[in-house]
Length: 146
Image (cartoon, helix red, strand yellow):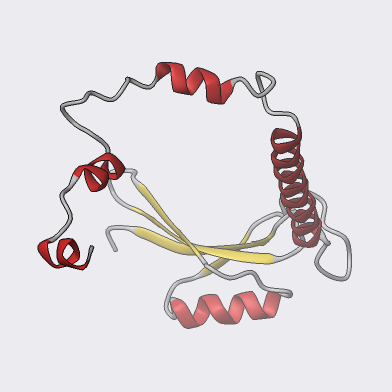
């Protein structure tokens, strides 16, 4: 066999079991393909790895971190709670900023005046749509009714 291949399986700091397929070529390049799932116990992870790569040996590795004995830690739940709190804080911040903008606009209400001053004046060569409607002659049928 020209390349060395094996499955590395171990328990992570979050308490779940993970595995990954590793292939090292003759040139020293390592390819690692991790499993896309997490497993609650060792046998589930071993069965999944053996089903994915049937003829490849499985090597156990030392756990990374200190998982609790007897099952997975609550790491993913803790992350979910933190994410929920963070998103709720962003939502509250956005609502408060909108309310404050409406109650007391920046510049003390002078933005409209400043925007009107920055807007170029309309040229008589290009009248507005309302001015064009007013300046049009009435149709012949409506003149006859008058």
